[in-house]
Length: 255
Image 1 (tube, rainbow, N blue to C red):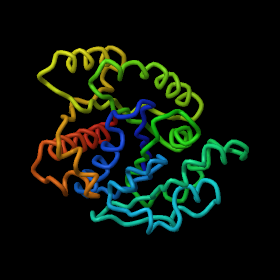
Image 2 (cartoon, rainbow, N blue to C red):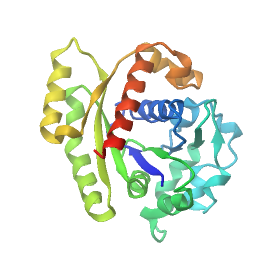
Image 3 (tube, one colour):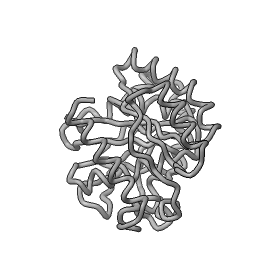
């Protein structure tokens, strides 16, 4: 059975899309069949894997609203074992279009039902909000990873996000996979203070791996590549590979 993982944080600029792309790419590099779903109308995950919106006839919007089959929108990527369900700017209208639809929170979950044995991991990049697109992703997911930037303001939205996740855990069987620190600077006291504060709240759900702030990580999406293809020996690649391995170790140990 596939494991469906939402990458979510209502705050923007925390490395959410970077994490979705590079976790999926790293898992694929390790031989795990992955599907990456772009649920963000900004479609940065789509462009970050080299998919030109001009070449996308149908996208995740059509799956949610027009009930197009998910397999009809999938694109392959430069990496073996990694496919993507792309988004375009059309997705920006989905929040309004979903409002009056029956079972509006479960459209993505329904679309994923037949894919439960196709991919080992299905990773969903959520928009930086708690609207219907994110709710669809969380309802469809088995578990959620929260990327957090190591800055004070990153803590402010954590309470509301946690309330939403805990409510969904009760109603839709969602589990918290873990919290991943991004843009980490080991030389600043603030980064370490944020880590300690979050550990008080989430305990062993916090990943040991921390993603550093690097220029190559920021540059890679503009070249349509995950960082392991853009900068194979760089610190960003090393960090996301360590994260993917830690993620897999937790799967095998049942944590």
